[in-house]
Image (cartoon, rainbow, N blue to C red; front, top):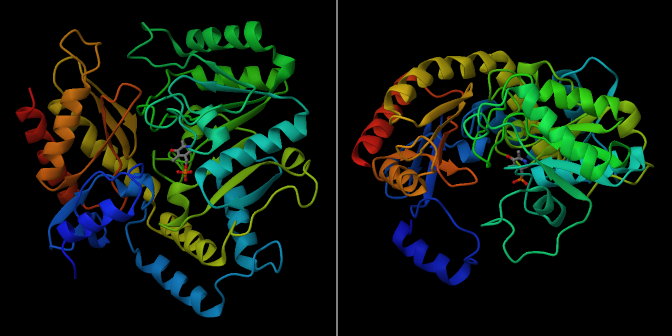
Length: 423
Ligand SMILES: *Cc1c(COP(=O)(O)O)cnc(C)c1O
């Protein structure tokens, strides 16, 4: 097998520079909470391929489902010759997403594509143009989802012009909005919508119930319900982007459940496929079915191998009670991270979606340099972690939900040593 160094040299000559990687080692295998490179070096996995391998890498049931489906057929295109597993995934999405109302679902390939389709559906169903999004939001890298995303570098820089009719309003960000309560922060956002957009023009309000790339921002209690109530009153579609938060990650099937909100549409991807690319839009039947036949779809959407993997992953989540596992991870990690965090730095998150925001001693000024140094030290010591945040100053933790508590403890001690070294 070629060494990581050899492959890396070939990569530089073959792979576009715009596609970057966190580490320069090349993977040989991964399972449970571990990733192993071609040199036999092991990392504890606090990244899960960005919240994807929730059931663990190469989870046995997922592997068996993929193998069995690959032997039957690999692709017919659901729009040409349909198959049962696509229907079964939609039934699972309908059963698991919040809200007991009648729903429909549609399957696509990626998170960005799910968000694009949710916006298409909301605009079509309402006949309105405007989409409201929030500061620090991340919704993907396609043209529309870049427009929906807040952060310029690296996602948007020189990639415009962007899609029109996107309006950005302030998020509830307890560390950074001067102690506004959830309802106060919602009033601030709603005032901008009312004055600058106008409720009757709003097709959709699109929000991550806990922000992902934007910094694992957990809005103050009451923020999401107030936004949901405004959307309902304005007959605007509330779209919850649960692509990172969904499928047990935060200790519930969906993060919307923590605040008891029932979004009209929910976008899902990442964890739902057990590592295969699959995504969905699920929501109110009247909205979903407003679109004419042929208006939604795509060549690969709900590919049969990805559907088989998703059904096996969802079964695994249910059988192993991975929502409870996520709450257990929170119980073990939160106190440890609070003990590790330097004075003024904030530890936050839910379930196995936790973060440490690094600030200067003033308790406010972002410390991106320290965050990068801590992440680098973790990688060198054998722990895969990711950073995020508008200011690049948030270290985020997304372990697979099947990780052992011994591996969690080992990973946490690596974080502790890296933070200790970093000042
Ligand atoms: C990752 C992510 C997306 C985009 O998903 P892709 O599969 O990378 O296109 C959209 N929204 C949120 C909240 C995400 O975390």
